[in-house]
Length: 276
Image 1: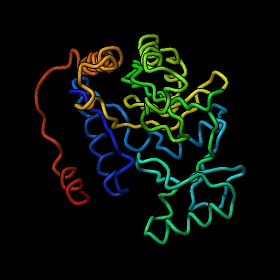
Image 2: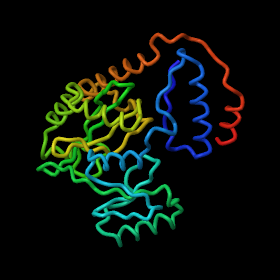
Image 3: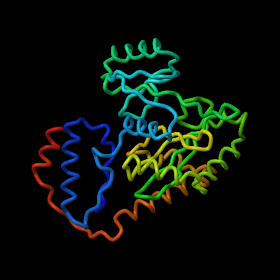
Image 4: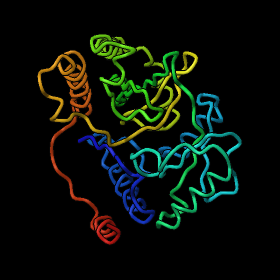
């Protein structure tokens, strides 16, 4: 079969070592087994954003709060390194505001080695709208998934009503449908995944001056939500075509591989059980 390793950034170091041992074990099984997303060699959020900044792909930097470096420009925001729940509070305009916000998080029990400060990258258009694009990458295939349009700098979900003074609902839907159909940033997306050494996941990004600015790669993203399967225009134009393409790409992962079972080295299972 084909094994995809996901959410490794959420594992403890001890558990991650056991996962790596299982990954290595699968590599001894020959051509009947394939695997992607190395559990320790794939770049996690901090390493990815730092690398993209150093290569000039992103024009904003990221800082571990446990290191001596502090942001060179503001505003910034705090976030956890290993979750997908967005900023911890508001934008911070200076060093004092950052240190005060950090102190509050530490007082709440947040481990300092999990906290990042990220420079805010302004990707608003002339109307003040932010667009966050989401695309899947499945072993070399780029599959555009959605466009979130927001009046807020934190673009988690499209608030269609809030955006309507600038774009009608039909304009919003047609823009998202064009993105899913045309796949306009496939080359830049594929290069980012190659840099990250990740072969399955969803990239979240925006555009600035015609180039992508990467927010993160989620290796265990939501594929579809039941609440969106409602027969609406967005369901028909955007969500269903994207899910179909994604399902086809995933189905191809183990094409031609023999079916069967194998026994896992019991010492690996013991290590996983001891750390889980």
